Each structure stands twice: as structure tokens, then as C-alpha cells.
Length: 159
Image (cartoon, rainbow, N blue to C red; front, side, top):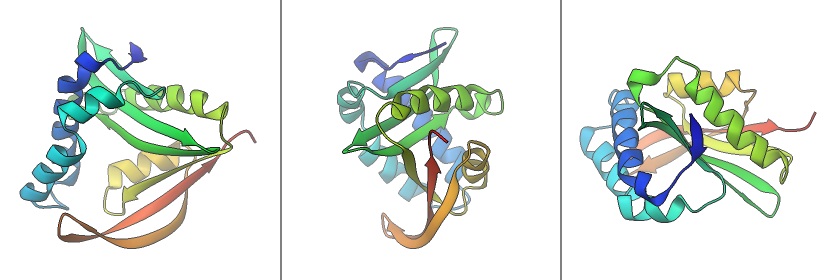
């Protein structure tokens, strides 16, 4: 089931982010950087507040949060900030359903969606390509002191 996130989901969302980041990025980033990112970007306190955003959905299986998507639209520009699944539930179409739910909301307010993904995140890049995203540019970034490359991807909507 996909539903809007609630403040009380914040702890489970945090845990999904941690599992997913470890699974996805452990060959790209150090364990310390992953831990810092999770503490910084996915604090339970911040997630509680963010669940109030209109485009923040969770996927539930057997009453447990197994994935989430978070996007925003400001001044007609949509940004997909996060979409993560517990690694045990990847490859089952749940991520696609979460993404579709967010895109349906975005289509009412914007004509394109932009996102950033680490270039070495093969699973993420493949997922976004299947959703119709195209690479706009690649840039070098520093993530908690470690150098990485990230891609900026864009998907045009409504046509």
C-alpha cells in the first residue's frame, strides 16, 4: 500500500534510508560518510517535519514502511529529493509505484522533474532511466569530505 507519510513514520523512514544507503553506497562511500549523511539528512526530527510536505509517500508491507519518496515543487520547478526502498523489497515494482504517485502530483504543478544521483549508483541510474529521465550534466561534488561525481537528470512531463 502507498500512502502519504505521517510524522510517526519518521523512525521507519530513517531505518529504510540507512539500510538503502548502506546497500547502495558502501562500495562508493566510506561507512563514516554514510553514517554522517544519514544523521544529517535523515534525522528523525527533520523527517517528522518533512512528512508534512504534500509529496512525501511511503510504501507499506504488512504494516511496516519499506520505502519512501519525497519531492517538492517550487515556482513550477519539481525536484525529486529521495526515493529509497529497503533492499529486501527492491525489484518488486514498489519503487516504480512510489515514483508514479509522486509524478502524478508533480504533473499538476510542473512540466519537468530534476534530480541528482551519484554517477556510480548503478541501481539508481538504471531505475531513473527506466522512468524516462535523461542525463543533463555530470558534476564533481564533495560529500562529507569525500569526492564523488553526480549526475543531474531531467524528465520532461506532459508530452
